[in-house]
Amino acid sequence: MASQTIPKLKSVLYCDVCTLPVEYCEFEGTLKKCKEWLKSSHPDVYDKLYGEQDLSKDLENTLNVSGTKDSNAEEQPAKLTKEEKRVEREEAKRMASKVLIKTIERTKRKRVTTVQGLDAFGIETKKAAKMLANKFATGASVTKTADKKDEIVVQGDLNYDIFDFILEKFKEVPEDNIKIVEDTKSKKKQ
Image (cartoon, rainbow, N blue to C red; front, side, top):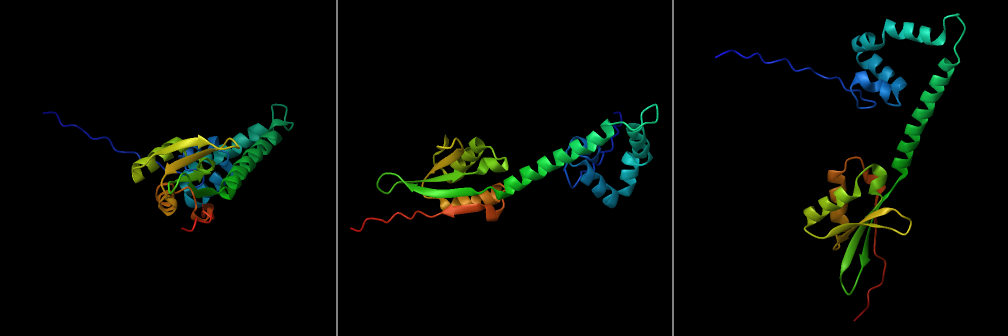
């Protein structure tokens, strides 16, 4: 029986800013922040990736063969800042978004619960509807609202249960951004 050697596993260092491996930070829009984090947290890896090579590359990019300044060198940081601003705008928009959970009364005492705004947090509404249907053993579907946004319609009065479920399963949705709209219709007195 031949002895088999087990190869060593490589440990991969992931960036805390963009969550990619540090070798791929340049493909994300936050390279400047990634470099700052890497330099402060792992200076040896920073030197390996961006050390003296970074300085010589910057020098080559800013000066062309004749020794004059290249105009593309000024445009690249502007593009980078535009992309960083876009990422920050998307993040701010996402944090300003609300998830609305409300109950609608159908016929007699039948109720349905609607969930709106999950798609703003990057959650696929069809998958979320399937998860809700499986969790609560009820029907759930995705419909379009009047303003062309997706909403999940779940059969039953499940406001607070869905609130807890969203907090548990979808960590990217902050608790402050989930709002339960109470049904304010007055009930008939018998």
